[in-house]
Length: 425
Image (cartoon, rainbow, N blue to C red):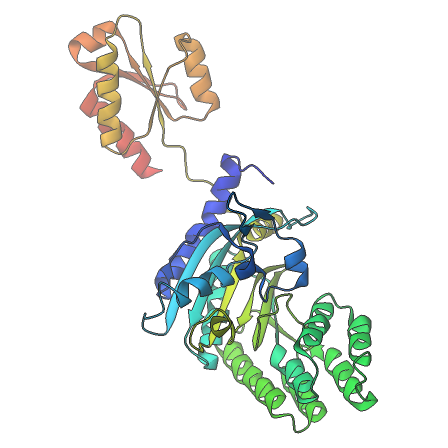
C-alpha cells in the first residue's frame, strides 16, 4: 500500500475536485459509509476474483468482516436501510478508499481511491445515458481528450443462457471468463452443461462481435439471438443509448463489444469502460444492476452507476501530460529576530492568516541567512522579518524572495503589498 506525498495528493485532489463538481452539476448527494463491512454483504455478487482478493478478518466478537473492495454494495446497504423511504430516483455519490489483495502493477494497487455515481430508481435508458455522460464529462474536465468508451449489455448473453436453463452460477463463470477474454474456457463451461452445439455456437458468435460500426454489429447480433426476447430488448436498449451518445458526445470512440463482461456478478444490463490513449487499463467503469437492492432485502429497484478510478486517472493525466500545474506558492516566511517579543511575532502571523495569507514561522532557531535560504528553496515569494527596532516602531521588514527587494513597512502596507502581488499572480 502506498503513501501519498504532497505532489501525489495534489494530483489526487485535482481528480476529486472534478468529481465533486460533477456531483454538484448532476445533483448527486455525497455519502460516506464505513471502510469495514460484514463480509457477507461485500462478498455477494462481486465476482469470484474480487472475493478472492478481499481483506477478510474476524473482530473480537467473532464476526467475519472485510475491507470494502468496491462501492456499490455499501451504497445498496444504505439504500435498503437509512434511505429506504427516500423519494426516487436517488442520486448518490462517493469518494472512498478501497482494498484488494492484488498483485501490485501499473494502475493496480492494494489500496486505491474511486469516485462513484449511483442512480437508483429508474429503469429507463436515460439513466444509463446520464451515467455515461458523467463519465465523459469527467474525462473532458481532466483534459483527457483521446479516449474510448467500450460498451456491451450482459442481458444479451444472460438472456440466451437463461432461456436455455443455464444455472446462474454457470452464467457467472462464463461471464467471468469472458471478462478475461478467455473465450475458449467460457465455451468449455457451457459444453459441460450438455448444451446443444447450435446454442453454444450462438454464444461463440456473440463473443466475436466487436467494432466501431454498432449498427451492423447489432443487426448481426439480432440475427444470432433470434426470438430470445430478453436478448433482443438488451440489443435495442444498446442501440438507443449509442444513438444518443453519438449525437450528444461525438468526440469519443465508441466500441461495441458484445463479448465484453465486467467482473462483478451483479450487472444485469448495459455495462461500459472508458480507456485513454497510451494506457491500456480501464479508467472508469460501470453499468446497470437492477436486482441488487432486492437481493439485499429492499424493494425491487432498478439502478445504474459507475466508479472512476482516481489513482488511474492521475496516472492517465501524467502519461498524457494533462496534469495541471499547481497554483503559485502564496506563503510567507516569518522570522522573529532575537529580542523581539514572541507575542508580537505571533500577533503579526495571526493578522496575516486572518487575511487569508499562509504564514510559516521560523521554529528551528536557525540563523536569518539559513532561514531565508530554506524559504528560497521552498519557493516562498515573501519573507517577513521582525527586528527589535521595527517592532518598537510598529514596523516590519518585507523581502521579495524573487527580486531581492527589501522594504520597511507598516503591517498594513506589507499586507497590501503581499495581497496585491498574490492577486496579480
